[in-house]
Length: 81
Image (cartoon, rainbow, N blue to C red):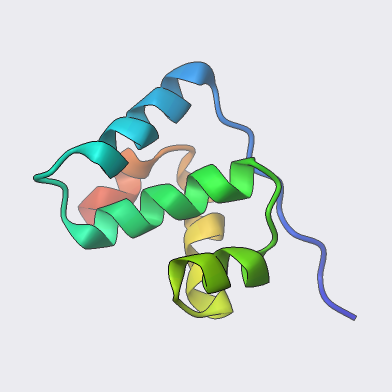
């Protein structure tokens, strides 16, 4: 049986910032993928669906979901790279 997904709750400000990162032409693709993982996870999608949609692995999605939950924002994630 699969583990339950970890819920991500975003404030309106966090959601705007993530959407801005995704749309900005100068944002590196790795940051765009991380932002999309957070946005889709907050929308209630599970790791398998996000992985399929973003053409990446479930493990990658799970890692970034957890890192977002631990840091509370992408600011810490961007520093760690």
